[in-house]
Image (cartoon, rainbow, N blue to C red; front, side, top):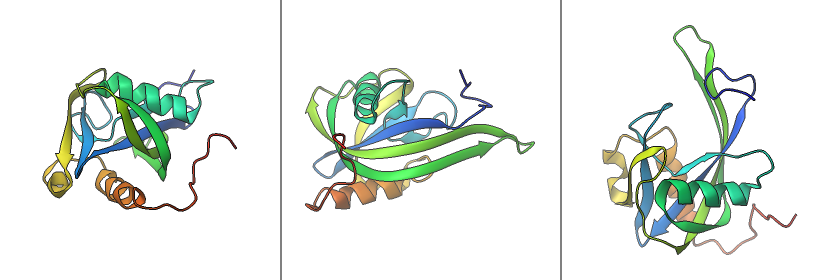
Length: 154
């Protein structure tokens, strides 16, 4: 099994953009990488787990919410190097637009805080790279009734 830090291969992670009116659900990271920064709830896909299962599990673990993935918002590469330019972390991230099925938000595992943040306050937070852009893309995708990129039945 590959370690998260100094891995021998890329790791696949999922994230969720969840909206309540004009607010988006964010979590404050409780561990490295990006300890203390605000980001979308999410985490690594487990062996044998579908992307949909991973999104549902990770969001519930970190926020207490049960969600349903609606569509894929973004695919991101995250290669983080240490001071010697060795690859400290390498993630391939798939961020999804999600709808709340049930639950009340509360900080769970791996996070120190969990809250819905007004979209107009995103610039005032210490966000992980790309978070604001993914949130705004997901906000626009909510109104799109075209074909979906993510179809778990294919």
